[in-house]
Length: 149
Picture 1: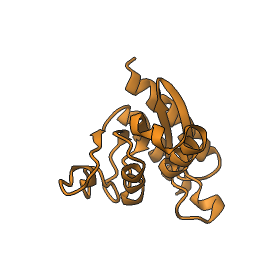
Picture 2 (picture 1 turned 90 degrees about the vertical axis):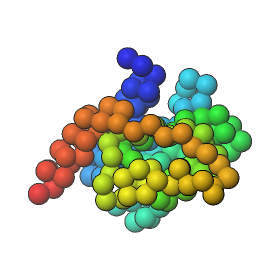
Picture 3 (picture 1 turned 30 degrees about the vertical axis):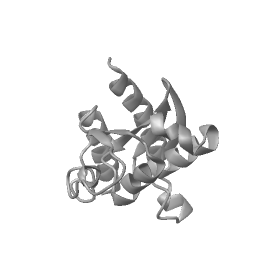
Picture 4 (picture 1 turned 60 degrees about the vertical axis):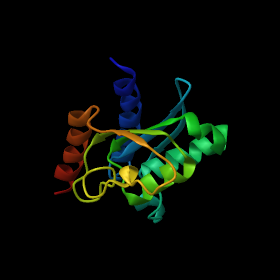
């Protein structure tokens, strides 16, 4: 198993936590120096806060633990392609790399709807890799929405 698959497994564990709480099952982790320094899963339903996406929660957790400057060497792993808000948070935190699982055809802002990280006028560059453990990530989302029908 490569490192990206390993860390995506950690993000999937966070997504499973969201699923268990009745939240849309998206999970994220921030990895720095071969260890998880931030974890998050969707909490928008429970909290009533539209900003508590997995990626933002994981970034907040990482900043609280290691400081914002450390994120300039980190990688964000998310089970689903980040939305505009989440990729904006990545840009502001200067995270250099994002790895995601399943593409999000309705709100994905890395390549599906928009390609924000490829915008040449932005000062910060973000390398993006999609499709890591894509089937597992997609299957969890499908299981969640099938259960709600």
